[in-house]
Amino acid sequence: MFTGIVEELGEVVAVTDLPDAARVTIAGPLVTSDAKHGDSISVSGVCLTVVDVADGVFTADVMRETLTRSSLAKVAEGEKVNLERAAAVGQRLGGHIVQGHVDGTGVVLAREKAEHWEIVHIGLPPGLARYVVEKGSITVDGVSLTVMSVSEDQFAVSLIPTTLELTTLGRRVPGDHVNLEVDVLAKYVERLAAPHLQAAHLRAEEAR
Image (cartoon, rainbow, N blue to C red):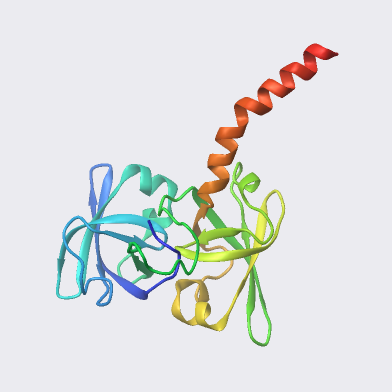
């Protein structure tokens, strides 16, 4: 589990294509300072398992499911990525509960610059809008953000200078794809409520 608070900007140093998968090697001195084989590291919002680690660099395998659902399918050598180690029990939860399980990718639609912040509009894939609410939480490229506004096909977030400077979101331009993870609590609520809503609907139909 993660919190969506990026610890450092890493750099992809190698990408190796494998049958139905890929192996990525990423430089990240901070997140590798105490990493070992089998640990989890969020790479731009994708939870990856450390296969090998040495000298400030770690390697992880990316399965086909992850390549299909995330922007890691197009990740290239030299690209910057957001890195976060798994949350430790007992530490402060600075963002929100993030699993590192990407629900889909969105497209940066527009950026609006203000004096001290920037508003970014991002397209929503079909089926995800119902999990996104104004003032709720969403993870974009591994960054925990608060939703400013939302419609059926897009949402907007406001980025403070720290986020613009220390994460990849300061570098994204219209047309770029970003990884999205909606609040897992919303998905659980929908799953638990569905049978009750269906039963209520059937009772209403029978009463007519």
